[in-house]
Image 1 (cartoon, rainbow, N blue to C red):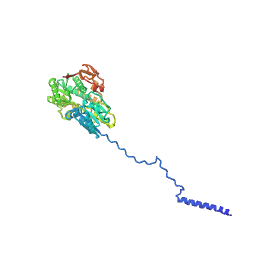
Image 2 (spheres, rainbow, N blue to C red):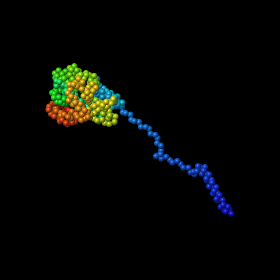
Image 3 (cartoon, rainbow, N blue to C red):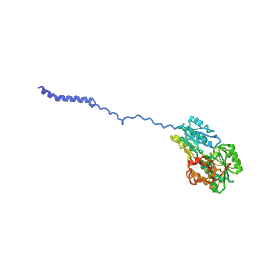
Image 4 (cartoon, one colour):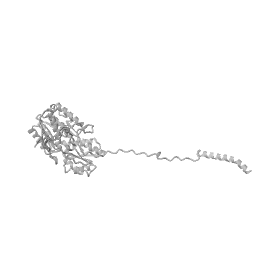
Length: 435
């Protein structure tokens, strides 16, 4: 009986239990077991914002030039000084400092003083006082040192040797000089026999000879040495001797004072300038005397050292650029390493207005043609011409002056850079070296 009554209650108990469970689930939001939010994975983690990368600051560069002479009143050191200023004007992170009248005994002390002032490019603007810089190159591996080449080619990874191909512009000057002389006599007041001087005079000589041949003229080139780069008194005396005794009516120089120009102005003969546009840059004399000059832009060379330092690269250790290379000034003007220039004008426009009517058109056309070819790197007087020895020059160790009439280099053969810079020790046939 009890069992029967219990079996009747079972369905009722089941219904009550189900009802209770339903109420519990409703109270819990319809979920018997709450589900945890998924743990974030590496792919879904929010990364902290990265700080913007700052551009590296431009390296501060100080270009220091040790000038062997005074700057004011010289074309050589004046051109180097102008180059330093132009580099500093172009690059906000470059500063230019200098010392004047530096001799070989003071090269290193001045260099170390300049380095203490922040210099990391140090230049000697002549070989005789620039070479000692090699002795401290290893001590300052982060400094680029440089020196003009006269004939020595010593280099180190941070000791650069350099010179511009000035002979290219000198060749163009020679064409003009050949056209202007009426006596057939051209004079050169020169410093002393050296590879540098002989090489530059060779460029001028080739231009004179080409001009004379084109015009069917007999022309003599007289060279007399001063014995020093800068000796105004002696340079004046030599210039007067060339005019009075050798009847030169066109004079140029491979020395550094303004004395030969002064004498030319006084004598009323033509002067051909060097290293700078002396009329336009310094206001020396006028185009009534200065027929043409050539201008040297050393900044082309210094810029290569600055660029190497900016890029953290080793510089080229032998630099010998010509008219095919150029530097863009701060104002956007593009100037080749060397160019003919006069009173602010370049190219054939640089020929003196007073001289221009005296120069045959075929010479003017040739000056224009050869200048354009050299600026494109398509022609060079030293490749074009044979080198025939005059029998005079400078004996070097193991390299005596070739006998007169000897062809040292045939026409059409490009001479090696190293040979031009260190072994070209003889005058070319066609000059007279005066005692």
